[in-house]
Amino acid sequence: MNQAHPNLQIIHRFFEAYGANDLEAIREILSPDIKWFIPGRHPLSGTKNGVDEVLEYFKQLQGFAFQARPIVMGVSDDYVIDCHLNWSNLENEDNIERMSCLLWKFEDGMVSRVFNFPEDQHLMDAFFNKAFPAV
Image 1 (cartoon, rainbow, N blue to C red):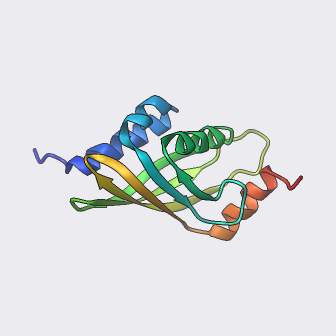
Image 2: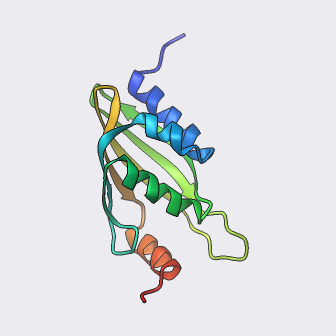
Image 3: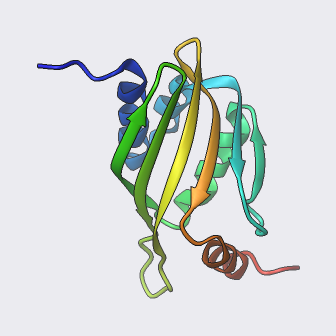
């Protein structure tokens, strides 16, 4: 049996923890000084600096019952690229279901940078702007 690359094993652990809303398991995967880049023009976009800001972002996503299922991954010694289907699962709401790709950078066996590339940025902006109307 082939052993998966260590970076792939980490990303699989991430998706298991994400699916279980296990933020402490996610904390163990992320570098304390991680930078997570969320593109767009909506209240959740921007760079999340440090593990606490990233986990706060995931707490905000929990309100939408987001799920993700990996579809394909590529790996090197410093990076993983994954493409996954993600969707919200709210009752009586307009839900979203789209592809996203994440580029994960590794340093010292931990995730140090993540770059998010959604399938349809305009749709994501509209979805989150509707959820967080301007005050």
